[in-house]
Image 1: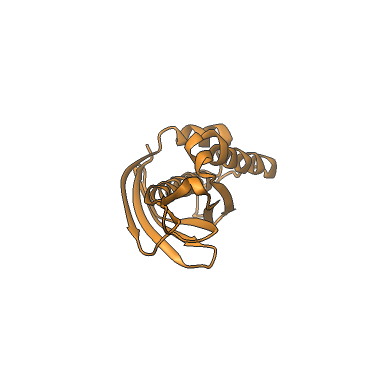
Image 2 (image 1 turned 90 degrees about the vertical axis):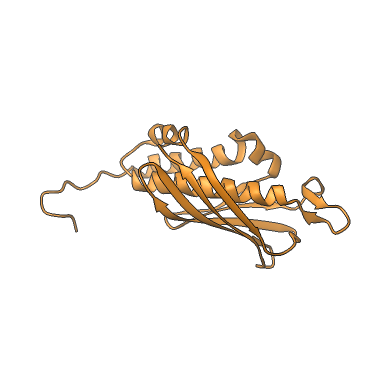
Length: 165
């Protein structure tokens, strides 16, 4: 229900929404080259969540004797997932904007603070990073992130702040 005198916000057409989702997948999977090096793939993209997954590979190992995921890979995956969640939240907030306008907003997005807590060794065949937006302000946005392995074990958590204007 809208407030008296308020005009209802226009929404994207289903075709434009599909175009936006396709563009965001392409951005985070292929256009950001480092994400492609990590093998990040969008695995969850709906109104309430965003998740990026990747498979363990020999070139992602940080401790060769134990074949554990490199801490830098964990950090990069969580940072990317946090940024992707912010962009998705912006797209959901500005439901009246087309794909070009949402992508223009991405050009202003940047990490200003990142904290990673490494909880367990990065052991697994597949990993899923997820993020929840805790604040979406006009200039700064914040997220909480999680990285789990294919057994559902929590490997690391993170929190981050991003500039959005």
